[in-house]
Image 1 (tube, rainbow, N blue to C red):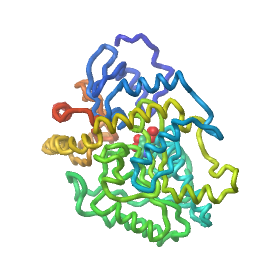
Image 2 (cartoon, rainbow, N blue to C red):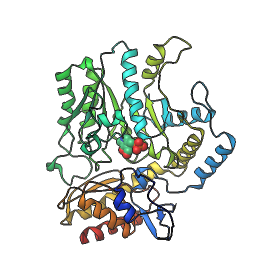
Image 3 (cartoon, rainbow, N blue to C red):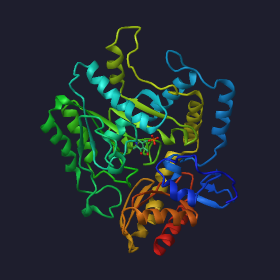
Image 4 (cartoon, protein in one colour):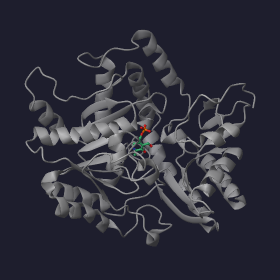
Length: 435
Ligand SMILES: Cc1ncc(COP(=O)(O)O)c(C=O)c1O
């Protein structure tokens, strides 16, 4: 290790701190789809960081926009004041979201976006004369961030246990992963009926107590769970029937991962609320956002007296000028470089290469949609042990991936070539064979 630094003080997030500090995996610089360690060793970014960097690292357009913004307006209060960039960005996002989802609230992360969305859902029903609707229906194995709202609707046991009773009134539907559908490429033909769990929640608790149902259109962090054919449509129908808001958490799927700006468009299901973050700034600045149907905004704002604050929520850094500049530059890149189309084009070669791994004895399932893939490895003695071994070995072999438990997750940048995607998957094969 060339760097002479003390590793003790930084308490790292979602990291085996003690193991890391004995054998650090440090990144010092990046360019395009490559990362470099402090000694200059090249590592391919197989997961776009944490699903954040589809346009490739260190884009000069974003750096220039951030630099200019920092010299023009570094900060201004977003409460009762604003700056032009926030409005420009909201307009730009509204052009990309499905029609009607054109009122945009800004946050600073996916977790904050999810908590904001849940609060908007409750505020909507209150403003609409139905304050009894407080329950949120979500799903097992979901990941909606780590703040108390997102944790409560999340479904990953390690994240939840130890944090008390969480939010009251959350009902979890079953997840959609079934052994029968192992190795399905894209959407499984069976399983849409699992959406009837929403109807069961209605039958159990009464529609008049349910505010919203929140799902990731494709479950990301837990290992890429793809909705069965017709599942999301069925959720939409049941939600409509009972006046329940449908929230899509698109923190991972937003901005092209499924070949269209939002997965809502890919699956042709229009939710009432969409959360987004990550790729919104190509990972360069912390920023999240919530898009809502106009009628939600109109109902909430219309219920408050003229001249008064309508929604008691917001962050010191909502629509931060510098993050806003980074996001505007990012969305220009996506458009000018045709990155949504490129993601769609790369999907087939990517998935062809990924499904080539299914013959390996250690691979127990592969799921994939768009430029996302989850590769399950046979569990070793301890749950998660083989996954962690894979993460370390892949890094040594020159590929950075996301690992959850024993699942290797790939989410390559859209600027990678088909040949580079094959190289990434060749590295995965070589490493798995030796595990
Ligand atoms: C679907 C989803 N929602 C929310 C979050 C939380 O985002 P953040 O880590 O930016 O708070 C994530 C993070 O991976 C996510 O995948």
